[in-house]
Length: 364
Image (cartoon, rainbow, N blue to C red):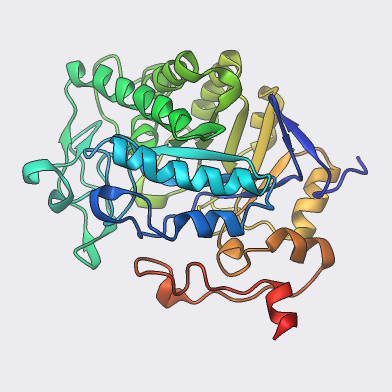
C-alpha cells in the first residue's frame, strides 16, 4: 500500500509531471485542409494542460495510415507547423504532451486512400466494423494483404513521424498498438493468418510492433517513446486465441527496449473491464518503467489501484471532453459535466472548446 495520491508530481523519464492524471488520446475528427490540426486545437489542448500528461489524438503517419474523415497527420510540413501551435500552447501553461502515432491498417475506406486504393492489412480479412467517412458511418472497405517488402516502409513511416513530432515540439510519442489498428492486427491471429516471418507464432506476430518501437527508439530515444496496447479489447473486430502469452511476450520485449511507458487498455476499449480473462498484473510485473492504466477509471478506482501499486499514471478519456479542468474537479470532488454526444465527432468550436470550467461557471 502507498499514501501517494493522483495529485502528486511524478517523474516520467526526464520529465516532471504535475500530477498522475493523463489525458487519453481522443479522436475528434476536426482536422482542416491538408489534415492539419484544427484552428481550435491549440485552445482545446491548452485548456486541458493541467493534466500531468496529455496524449494528443491519434495522428496518421501517412495517407495510407488514415482511416477516418478529418483526422490529423504528421507527415507534411504544414501538419508539423500546425501541431507546433498546439505544443506551444500546452508548454506555455506548464503542460507536457506526447503525440499518438497511428496507422489504422484495414480500418479504412477506399475514399480515404490515395487513388481509391484498398486499405492494407496483415491479411486480406475485412474488419467487422465501421468508419466515419463522407460525413457518416460506413462499413470499412475490403483490405489487401501487405507484401513482405512493404513492411520496412511502414516501419520507416513510424520512424519519420516520430522525428516530425519532435520537430513539432512534442515531448515524446505514443505508438498506437491498440484497438484493432495495424500493429494490433498483426499481433492478433484473428486478423493475421500470414505464413511468413510476420505471421503464425507469437514471436512472428509481434515482430512488426517491436520493429516499429525499436525504430522510434533509435530515432528519438527510449525516454521519449511510449506505446499503447489493448490485449483483450475486441474493438474494430480483432480477436486473439492467446492474448496472455502474446502480450506477456510483447511486454517483455518492450521492457528490454527501455521505453518510458506502457499504456494499457484494461478490458474492452470504452466498455467492460472484464470482457475476457486476462492478468494485467502480469504486464505490470514485467514492465519496469511507467505503467499507465486506462479504461473506465473513476477517482475512486484510480485511487485504490494507485494505493495497491497496480499502476503509476491513470488515463481519462471522455470525462476530459466536457471537463477541461478535470484535474481540479477530481481534486475537489466537484461534479462532472456531461458531454454532448452530438458534437463528439466533426464540427467546429461547439462541443470542442466551449465547455466551461468550474471557475467559468461560478463567474456566471
